Image 1 (tube, rainbow, N blue to C red):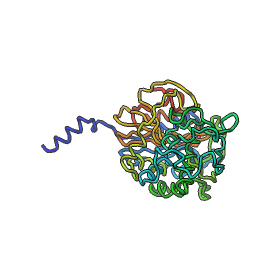
Image 2 (cartoon, rainbow, N blue to C red):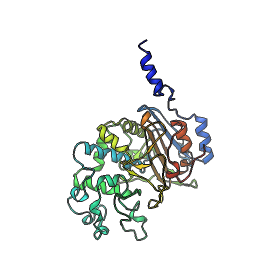
Image 3 (spheres, helix red, strand yellow):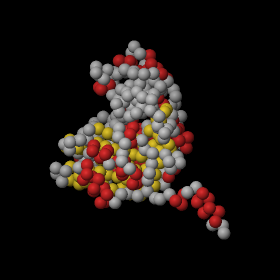
Image 4 (cartoon, rainbow, N blue to C red):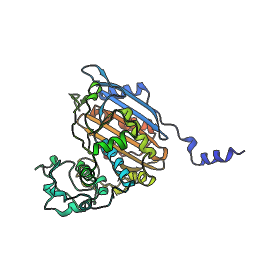
Length: 376
């Protein structure tokens, strides 16, 4: 009867009733893609911290009849931010970076004195730059627009007190990169390669363009189905220069959900809700609001955190531009993730359905992320 005690404990915790994560069947995927006229889709399933499935459908270039494969190079977009945050937390573990140190302690000269690779002279008359910390920058609460070129005059400015509320900003990641390169005297691309890509065996991922990518890369498709060629990014940008594959992203997120390479404290800090999010939507980024999210939506470090019905933290990160739709959702209670990459921005319309089929019923805040409520 020794088997009875662990079995009884398992029944009490409902672990026996938790179905495994599953990749949707081909007919389901095909039907959804045809419905939205999608050109390409790649999907990976992670369960209990292990990769269970990596698959792809459709075209990397429909005009040439080139299929999208699991090793096809795709644009990572803002998934770069989460991978970069993971690297920064390794520096924290090593005592090289203090998340709460003010910027003036982390840089050898005042931020407004920097002119290259980005110019911060616009902040010379606003002392609020001194209040910025890595934690504020990682939680997207610096007070900047997403990018300065979105401002009417193309100038960088504060829109609110740093640390007071969430407002998604790639500018914050650019300052974090400046800390790594000017304050710590490290090469961002080399550190990402060594600490993240090599660690997880991501052989076809890089922070900038590699010539060997040209033989098997995905071109993109916009909202109207118009093709746009893959951009060969020659500069490392922590905010979003990563090229990658669905095979490599599966390895990355399986490692992250397990916490490989981080102390337990740093892994927990990454997905902790540090700053409640009260905006109704993520975009436009400077939207103010007083929304009350029942799933306790909050800014983590490089990801967004929420409370999921599975009993633990849920967290996610998207990556988007006019021709790219990426989304990763993980549930800590089951160490379960769905990783979805597409070279067609219209794929975002089917992601809620795919996530539900892989993860089961969940509390992912689609209304905030994509500004729509998916059907059930």
